[in-house]
Image (tube, rainbow, N blue to C red; front, side):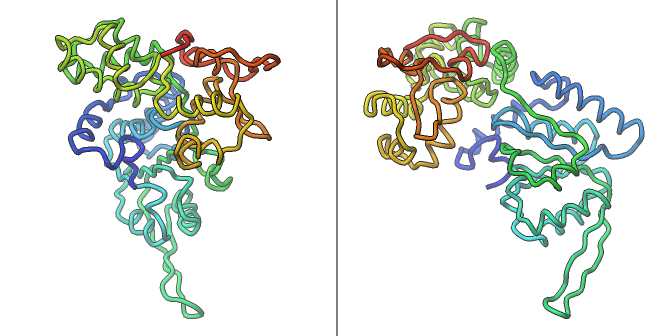
Length: 357
């Protein structure tokens, strides 16, 4: 898996990857949303340009699909520098990292996606590269091993992670700028959709864009993916224009309901409510009930369900909240305590919660 996996699945067709790439903002001014991070980056980059020095190393954290890879490429573009792209899992040995570092030119940007998954020997080599622009390559084994110091041209490391808690303290402390990307609200997603529709040549009205934005889980990548699927539906079964009715009909075909739940999400809620009376139920049992691996349920379905206030993790297992019962059109059992967690469903992203599909 490569760093591009943060943008689009490695199994996607080449034309899909080309489309995804074409939707990327190329400059900081074109990047929509994340207003605070964008302003902080602008100050950082302009200051470095005035001093004619590479900016401090940059760490971007946050859930998938919010623009970490796009921002890394924008950093390189704003600096007028080349960018080298790799990923943490791809760097298995310190020699792999040394080979990349020693080929960098002065001022280049090195982007490491999912940097928390970098191998420990490579991470330790990265420390001296980030601080002193030097790496020590060990040649040979045992008592005859020799460390050869190699200079590295001054560069800027941009690291991206979806799980910042897994970063070691020494690595995190070596980043001069740390930013967290938050989920988008509906208004910013509508701007993202308008820009993407213009690039793709899709006719979309404000109501259609609002409908897609409300089902995109606060994530631009999901919004762009849904836009392409709604475009397909509009071209085949309508006049090519994405209106409110066309968007609703298309998203019904693709099984994305009004709060952004897909087939797996609803299967988890259905099993929890209908088969286990709302829980608590263990993860493995819940996964068997929906025919998926426990890791898939935990990493793919649960994060959004928990954020949306539809599912709660407790010491005894997973529990459906009153909002989950309402979303499925069911009456919760007497005595079920209302959720004290996040605001239910689409309210998280500036929308309005509506039960049903």
